[in-house]
Image 1 (cartoon, rainbow, N blue to C red):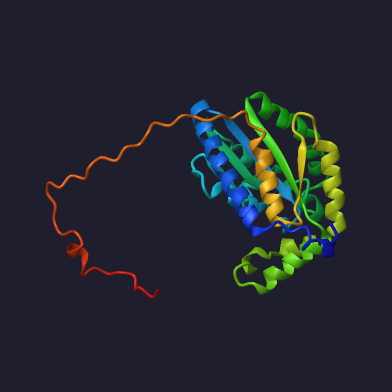
Image 2 (tube, rainbow, N blue to C red):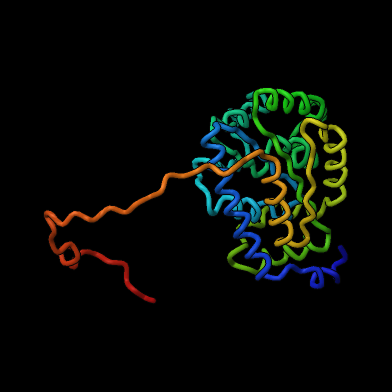
Length: 267
């Protein structure tokens, strides 16, 4: 999408919020189904910096239980972790029954930032690309749903988002040295992406590319696709009935804390 077409193609806030509300209700149904059936799932979120992965993850998780939808966003490996088998620290976060794990960046760090920035050797990189399909086959054969997303954003849109992070005090924490490096090395990251797809876009664990120049469209498109990956169905819930509050032992429980420390009511 050309930069000048972005406004024309913009999804209205009203339509976006209506669809997001519907999708989030479906995510609750998915949550109940996962708990009832013991389903396990891993969802991998990768893509260019500032492509909107975090925004999608936030919309997926904001109306569901964090005990079912677990977000894993690992920091840089410690000195000890650097001596482990590369995939070891990711396996530690894999789902148990009734859990859906969302990896905000994943083992594919090795195929992206580690490769481009020289954080791994050529041998380590090549071994990863060769071994990843087999590793993912192993995951799937153990009954775990594996879904992989790549968020793709245009060069101009990425620059706009980086500049917004520089000037917006709510977003400045998002701008890291790695972001600036990814801006400088756009084509290096493109080549790494292409090589990753060539080696790991398999029939058993395909990459699903999300066009992300429009944040709102990317969110609803991704969630719609995610829901379609599961054979979930409505799980009947027991009707909840309010009982009557017991009045035995009633006292003035408002006055009893009147002289305690309250947060100043500025608003």
